[in-house]
Structures are given as C-alpha cells and as structure tokens.
Image 1 (cartoon, rainbow, N blue to C red):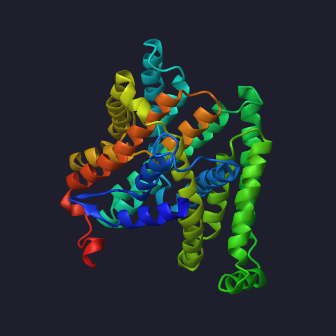
Image 2: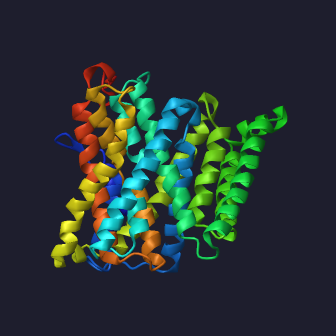
Length: 389
C-alpha cells in the first residue's frame, strides 16, 4: 500500500495546478493521513512499518548530507548562512519562549528548532529550474538552506539526548564529529587505482559495491550515533556528508543517481507515508486554538527564517531579498522529522505537532511559488526546464 502511494504521489507531483506544483512529499503525507487510523482506517503502523519508517528517516538525512556541497557555498555564503541561522535560532527561542509564557506550547526548545529549519532538498529542484547556475543568489540560498538543515540536526541530537547531560553530550558530539572527519579524510585521500577501478566496474554489475558500501556506512553511522546517545538521524546526515565528499564531480553522477533512486524511490516514502498515518488532522479541526496555531506558526516561520536576510543587504539586491527570505522559510522534511521525534519521545503534544506539520505543508505550497514569481528577470534561467530547454 505504501509503495502504491509512492507511485501515485510521484505521478501527481508531475501535474501543475495553475502555477503550483505540489511536491511529492505532501502527496505522500496526505495519502498517509487518508489511509491511517485517523482517516479511513485502512492501515496501522506495526513493527515492520516502524522499522521502514525509521530507515526512511535516516535515509532522508543521508540524502540531505549528500546534497551539502561545501565547495559551492564556502566563504562568505556559508559564513553568512550560519550567522543567519544563529540569529534565526535566537528569534525562534524568543518566539517559542513567549508562546510558552502564554501557555500555548509546553516544549519551547523543540518549537524553536522547528521554526529555524529550512527544507533545502524540497526547494532545490525548483531553484535549479528557475535560477541561472552562475547566479550568486543561488549560492547564497543554497548556503542558507544547508545551515537550516545542518544546524537543527546537531541541535536536535543534543537536545533530545536522554543519556547524558549537556556537557557530556557536547563531549560525545565532538568525539562523533572526530570519527566523521577521519572517515571523510579516508574517503577523500585513499583512492588507490585498483580500488577506484573496482568500484567503477562493480557499479555497473550485479555486485553494486559502491552502493553497498554507502548503505553500510549509513547504517554504521546511524548505529554509532545511537551508541553515543544521539538520534540516528545525526549518523545518517554525517554518512551522507562523507559519501557526498567522495562522490563529487561528473564521475560520481551515476552513483549519486542510484542513491537517489534507493532513498527517494524506496526508503523515504515509508517515512512520510507512515508519518502521515500517525497525524491526527482531526485535532486541528476540533480545537479552535490548534487551528489558529497554523497561521500563527506560518507567520513566525517567515519572520524567524526571513529576518536574517538583513545580513545580506550588501550581497543581495532589493528584488532578491524577498525571494531569499521565502526560500529560507520553506520547511517540511525537518519539521516532520523533529515533530516525529518529539511525539515518540513524549516531549511534544500531538496537536502541536499536527499544527507544526500543517505549517510546514503550507510553507512548501506557498513560499517557493511566491519566491519564483518575485525573482528578478536578470537571475532567471533564460529557458525554463519544463519548456524543453
């Protein structure tokens, strides 16, 4: 049933409704809600589905790590991006603290992290279609999106670490980062000609050695992350960064396409569909308070992730600043992931989680489309991708 939904969602994602193209993950979540216990009651998540859901969550962060191209955004774009994310985190904590003081939410830290996220993987295909590849605007947006994914991943792993205190958690985090750096150096430095030829040859045979090695690394880093007392998503993200570094360039393109197919074609749909099955959308309708939270969270998301555009006044024109803010405020995969972890650990109320996911859904539907309409003509692609260019 989940794979049938994945096929239907992929087909529906190819259809434009006016100027809007609904991303595949929204269809997957919507179908999950429909078949779940809070919808038609056609399916419930047993042990097998929960295992595949968790595997899909790790695979999602693995691909986020692979997409982080530091070579493209290094220097001022990356520096501004992380300064902007720290500013966003401060604004998110202030907003969440106010909501906590008003007794609207009970977990301000998780809400702040949700409000400081960016869905780089969601808007990146749209950005590639609409913005010229040589545009500095694209580099700044990609860097901001990378910071909006990497920062919350680290923060969530520290905040949701039940086994240690903050200082112990920080020490273990540095130890885990050291392991990742060693793995990255090995991946970049040890390339004997025989090993390279073996990997190239086996990638086009039934052995699929490079793919198997990457999945082994993803599973090992996820398990290691759990052993250190962190969330498995941190290990998945780190493994993706290591594999991404080792597969950069035109030579690694066929391999990256295979990992795209395995993760987004098989594992990731389980995460979004099963997450949709667990969402109680009825809680949004039954409670006027929860219904009001969605537009309020949406405005806060735009403010928290949009205000850092003020740091870019010397780098972006006035016409580029609003699209930048809207792309930065596009958030869904990490919203679903953080709320999922929060609910399963008992740190987040289901109705607040539903409101936050609803906010993420609306941001993906609205913000990239508005940003695309506001983009200055001088940074647009000369020929749109879907017109045959």
